[in-house]
Picture 1: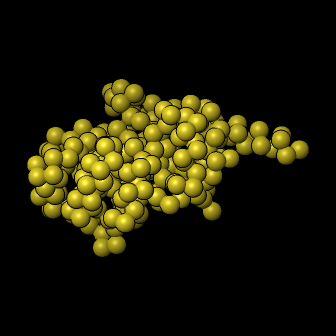
Picture 2: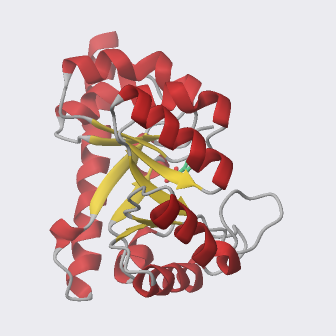
Length: 230
Ligand SMILES: *Cc1c(COP(=O)(O)O)cnc(C)c1O
């Protein structure tokens, strides 16, 4: 009985993954974009190996986590088993977790302050490992939200790119929950264009199609694939 149930759940995760991929493709084609220019990051926070393995088996290779400690508990073994997995840190990073984050992750989407940039630069040099970096922008200028204020972005990029000589791939945002996300996606897209940054990390389960239509190159989708986090 248990086995039958597990297989049913596996099918569900695979079908949801396929459905999300199909929706991304459709949204890209609708605005004349190459669907291959949009990469899906499956956000596995709160879900364990049992849930993640079928998604890996279905061919998914990019995953996102928002906490370093939680990721450490499940990803080292999975990464060993699948060396082509790419792990993206999409939550805020405290400087005391920089060492662990550099060791485990491949991409950081949430670079947002000078102190973190300095700590990352030192740790990446010490370890001889370079993470790909995106800068999080607080497009809604929310008090409690991480990210660089839009007005501070030019100076922050100058510090990181020119002074610290760190390569920045693009920008990331999480729109305020009570606002039209497309407005924020269009704004982030404009900021990235102005600064010549190619990557745009935007769009979650509820709004990834709008993000794709406005230029997202990474979408971060969790609950549409794994189900509700409860
Ligand atoms: C949890 C999370 C997501 C995924 O959210 P869903 O609504 O489950 O798709 C995307 N981005 C960030 C930064 C997150 O923390």
